[in-house]
Image (cartoon, rainbow, N blue to C red; front, side, top):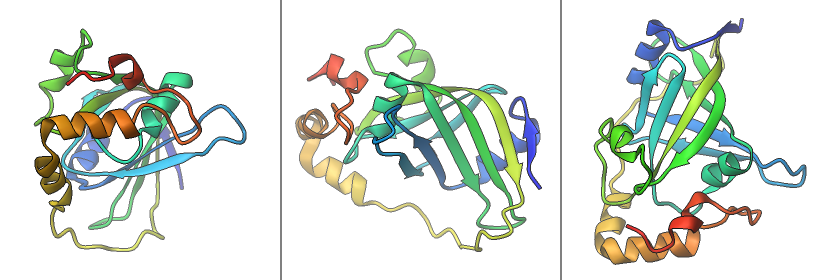
Length: 187
């Protein structure tokens, strides 16, 4: 049975900290736009307060979350217990993108172990928290992080990362702009 909370409790925060993967979902306002759902890992999620969270976002093939939150702010995070007691957790909120040149970057960045391919930090103000049973989620064993992204980032180097980001991350699949468009070419 689902339970709702107004904020992230200590028990919910503890559950989040134990998870190795989370999912982030966002969508454009257009009925014909594509809903995005992305898995994330790499110890990149932080609970900043009972109503505020953030995650370190790395350069990847798209930048849907950033485009969607720029357009309408809607964002949902989901965590599933794949080990131990079953549980599903959803955090509903309003998100925004923080870039390296933004005034609040230094304060947010100190919460993470930034890597060379860190593209931005997504911050969200949480307005509703939901837990549910998770009985249908299978058990999986965590074996570790993949290293392909790190090898790729090292191979193409800092200039290659900027070029890749500028070629692939300035608009969404539906053509919506991302905040990166305003920082074209910045490190």
